[in-house]
Length: 111
Image (cartoon, rainbow, N blue to C red):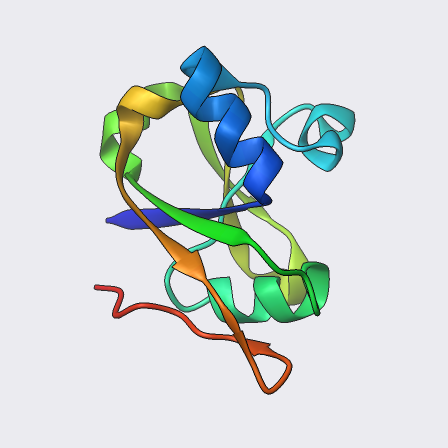
């Protein structure tokens, strides 16, 4: 199963330069890297990244992250994937920009 991380351009650049990151400031504060499933990613973008430009969507295979990935109840009682460890560039299968059109982020086709 693929899971997704939305990153600001500077966060993506840091991940590329360092090979891993503890995540965005909210991830560091919460103690885990926040991810979304394909069905959750659009709402995550609308709630937490509204109007933000230069975003990158990174796709990872949940099974490749091992026991550091926990599925925990969050927004609306849904389970979200949380990574208790660094986000590693080596785990990113693909990435794509999330351009803004008419105030909403345009997502690529996601399995």
